[in-house]
Image (cartoon, rainbow, N blue to C red; front, side, top):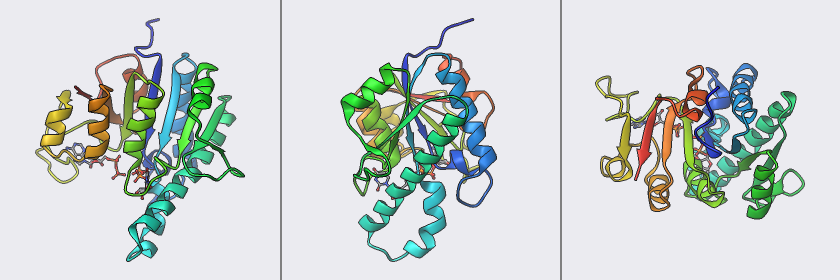
Amino acid sequence: MSKPAYKRVLLKLSGEALMGDDPYGINRATIERTVADVAEVAKLGVELAIVIGGGNIFRGVAPGAQGMDRATADYMGMLATVMNALALADAMRHVGITARVMSAIGIEQVVEPYVRPKALQYLEEGKVVVFAAGTGNPFFTTDTAASLRGSEVSAEIVLKATKVDGVYTADPKKDPNATLYSSISFDEAIAKHLQVMDATAFALCRDQKLPIKVFSITKPGALMRVIMGEDEGTLVHV
Ligand SMILES: Nc1ncnc2c1ncn2[C@@H]1O[C@H](COP(=O)(O)OP(=O)(O)O)[C@@H](O)[C@H]1O
Ligand SMILES: O=c1ccn([C@@H]2O[C@H](COP(=O)(O)OP(=O)(O)O)[C@@H](O)[C@H]2O)c(=O)[nH]1
């Protein structure tokens, strides 16, 4: 059997990865499917750090957050990612994968705080590390958290699993004529304002020379194909 293309990766899962076709929240069948994909990769011996989003929960409360102070709403969003991280780690435990959740905001009775050397130790021990609460700061996104943590743990690549199967010339959900890039440079993605990730996340990865692969969260086998270095999704590179 061929070998994985990477030894250590940072996987960014949007809240969507737990939501499925529900309007919001956590869908049991969907989380199990996501975890089965992740488990397959972990069992190959690839060291996996995960940053989980919160859109699936935050969307449910967002109407009530209207008119709210932005920073306060963002803290609610970060707490949503903590809930997702707990659900994800628990689902991993069910399939025999040991996961550790680390939070960027202090919430010690619930999960341990993010301590970089500890995260590195877990990864070396073959445990999956789930980073919760994004960067711990309002006005950021979990995509930026993925770039940050990916850099901190020296991941070889950031794998962004999302609703679309790669980076397009325009938002494919809005423009039916948009075409898929097989690869694109950070500078071009930023200059063209391609919104698949925010500019802060792109810029951090560019500066750290940390490539990003954007691929579908729903396409069966896509994560494994990416891990094996096969042609899948879009590579964003320096
Ligand atoms: N140029 C583009 N290529 C691909 N996707 C794009 C592009 N511009 C905007 N998008 C949108 O970005 C989304 C991916 O971002 P993601 O962080 O997973 O979602 P969200 O933040 O909305 O939960 C896709 O759903 C897609 O519709
Ligand atoms: O470093 C961070 C990461 C996240 N968030 C908040 O948490 C929410 C959920 O994260 P995100 O939208 O990135 O999740 P996803 O779309 O990937 O599910 C965001 O909308 C922000 O309000 C934040 O304030 N700082």
